[in-house]
Length: 72
Image (cartoon, helix red, strand yellow):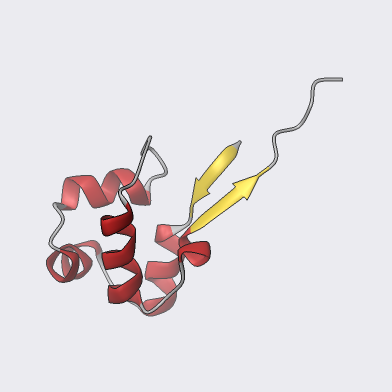
């Protein structure tokens, strides 16, 4: 699994949609959608900071590390 992006969960808790967050953070809806759907390969600290500011959360609320299971 590795790194999981929980942006959709945080957005739901804050009752904010993709369009509104896109405007607040000044990021395209397409790029936010990539993050929200856990398809991103990277995220800039400036982007993460803007998202955290807009959602009033911590980076750890959005990003989670899940240890991969070792093969048997």
